[in-house]
Every structure is written in structure tokens, then in C-alpha cells.
Image (tube, rainbow, N blue to C red; front, side, top):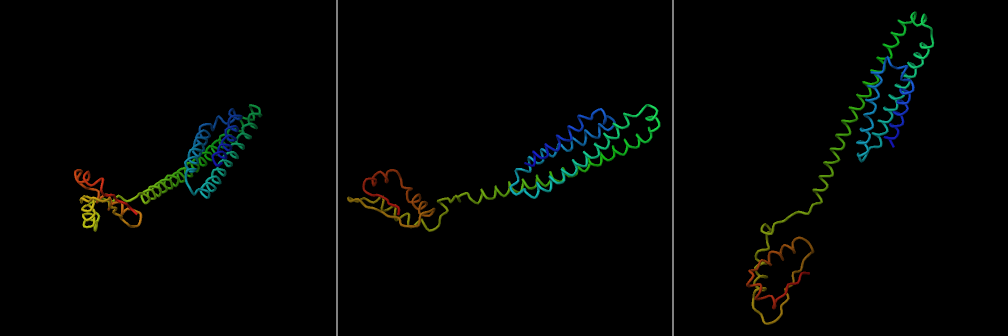
Length: 219
């Protein structure tokens, strides 16, 4: 929405310059510089739209953009009117008012340059804010992802399972003519799974001998 508003304002200014190109030749360089600086706001607002909490920022930025665009239009309108009036005068009258015209050109040129500098200042300030805000949000997302990652626990570093695991291994590898069920009771989660993994480290030959006799059940 903000980008569309800026596009509309810039299009109005562009039309003003296009339809009066023959009247603004004397300040064409300053006007083009102003328009190019105003055009920078489009990319700025595109980046700003990626910020999560941006309503106040966009509102303030749009107000500032609107103010400078309207001010630029007002100056150019006045210059176009004065240039059109001068063009309608006769050669003698133009010659008599040459100093006034030169003074007017100098004044308008300075006003446009002043607005262009203000536009550049606003853009640079807002750009710095947008870059910083996007970096902070990216760091926040990275921190959230890190917190959500499941901890990786090495089986060899688990304390308190060794003795119990050895007991289970003896039961699993022991020879028995009857089917035996070994239940591991505990809260579902990391601990019981690591205990099972630790207890399952049985030499292949032993596991083959006891596979048909014993079974392990996790509850």
C-alpha cells in the first residue's frame, strides 16, 4: 500500500515534468536529481515491508515523503507558471526582465537542491533503520530456531545407566529355556531411549544366541 502511494506521487511529479519539459530546461539537472532521489523511496519501502512491526514506521515515512513531494510540486508549478508568463512576453520585455529571470532561476535551483538534499537525508536515515530492524529480526529468528532444536546427548556421557545396563545385558544374554520379558518402565523421553540404546550394545554372537529366548519391552 505504501509503495503504491509513493508510486502515485512520483507519477504525478513525472507527468508535471514531462508536460512542461520545454519550460523547465533551465533547471532540468536539479529536477532530475530530485526525481532520482525520490525514486529511491520505492526500494526503501519494499525493504520496510519485510519488517514485522512496521505500522508506525511506514506512517511516519509516508508523511515525510508526501510532504517533500508536495513541496517539490509546488516549487515546480510556480516555476512553470513564471516561465510560461515570460515566454508569452515580447522580446523587448524579456530583455528588460532578464535580471529578474536570472534571479528567479537561481532561487528555484537552490530550492530544488534543498528539497533534493532533504529527500536524500530522509532516505538515508530510514534506510539505516530498516537495515538495523531486519538484522535484529533475523537474529531473533535464529535464536528461536536454536532454542527449538532438540539437545543431542551422547550415550557415553549419560551418568547412572552403566550398572543397570549391565544387569539388563546379562539378562538378555543369559541362557533360558523359557521366554522372558524385560520391562523398562519410565517416563517417555530421552532417558529411557538412551538406556535402551546403551543396553543394546551386545556383541552380535551373544545377541544371536539369546534372540529367540528373551524380549525387551519398553513401557
